Image (cartoon, rainbow, N blue to C red):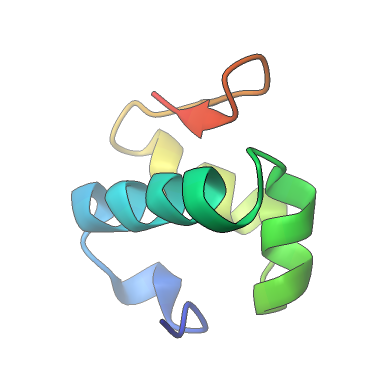
Length: 63
């Protein structure tokens, strides 16, 4: 999965993909995920916030 174009993705689909990757590949560590995919964490969080999602570090997911 290439997340380089995450800004143009559907926000709900993006949240689903990110949460799947966080759960399956990154043990809930958002910093590792954004480093691996070389994307800007602030931009990702801003994009997901447009649909009301925020990252909850205690569960390692966007909700």
